[in-house]
Image (cartoon, rainbow, N blue to C red; front, side, top):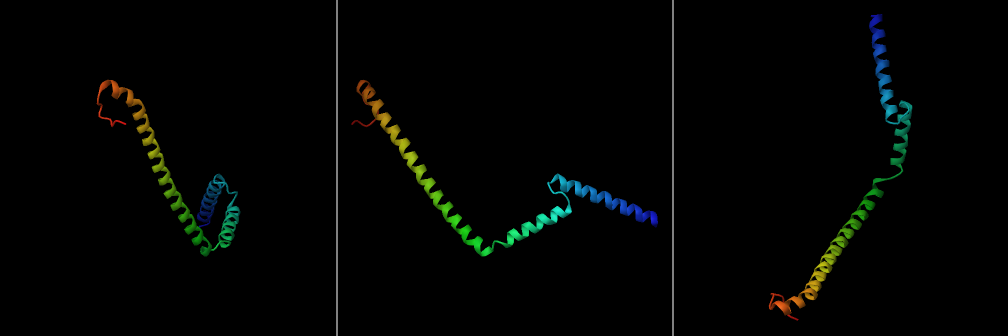
Length: 109
């Protein structure tokens, strides 16, 4: 029984050492450091209420929706500008061709 107790204690120490090693690899010095981090996180979360977060989330959603509408408007403006540039280029480049080749299917000015 005494030998069994020693083996169990040794297994526990090996397991604890492995756990401490994994904590150290994750940037936590030891279990005390983990408890300290948990306490800091808890205090930080306690400093902000859910009642404060909900209106802030709503404001962000409103802003994001406005930005999406603005993006869509700008995209339409870009497309119109590109189409207009193509029409102008076609009209400027097509006038000489239409006069020499006859009716090219383009509207005359």
